[in-house]
Length: 292
Image (tube, rainbow, N blue to C red; front, top):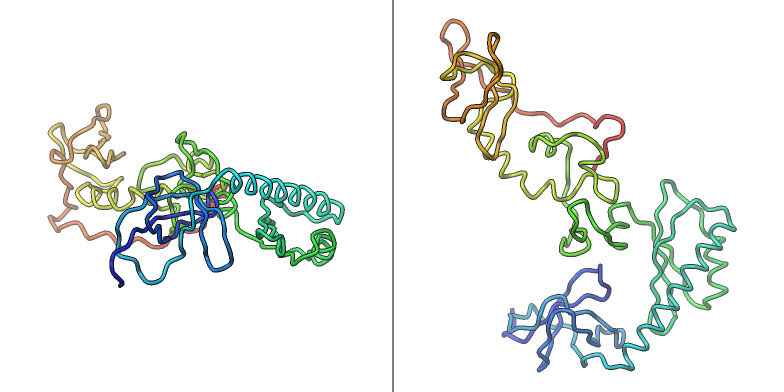
């Protein structure tokens, strides 16, 4: 670990990963546009984390300058060329009868390499398409197939919560998500409720999973017989975060009790109730529910 330097976090694209750069004497705020030297020449980047004295983990790319009007004009022209390349690639993909979804094109500043990102449900032979595109761009053409979660991260969008997608704004990598997490949180297992823009289980199901699991340890399981101030019944539902239990009775309507007022009922004979077996991995979700 080297001595402290003024370090800034930047992104090469609005939805790209954040990496550290040596800001030198520049005082940079989030949203500033800067030119950096990453070893391949000058590239424009967006400040994602304001500059501040931090311990630099070794040699870092340098911030050359704050982007001026000429830099911004060149970046805008470069973006237009990438959009035109994407439009042409989509047209040629349709002409070749390829069932792929091209959604992004990236070009090196000199135009020597063009990378097209696409999504497809099956393997695709795109050699003819690459030869076609190479003739237009007169450089190296790469085709990269990504999954639906990576596609959503790169394209961006607004989630059902009304905010920008987590994967686009701050998640550095995807965490495994299972349908069991939705069950722990008593969510309705409806694809429209638990699925994100990518069509898979929402990444945010992970955030509160540990809290729900820990809180549920103090509550009886659904279906267990319990004693309450109003008699004996069976647990029908749990409000895990509020610590409340809904109990169903044979001779009266169901009632809600605080967890402290509910005690598990020992089975006949007075022996303690056996421990529940450890949960096994959930089977594949029903048709229509996305898997991770």
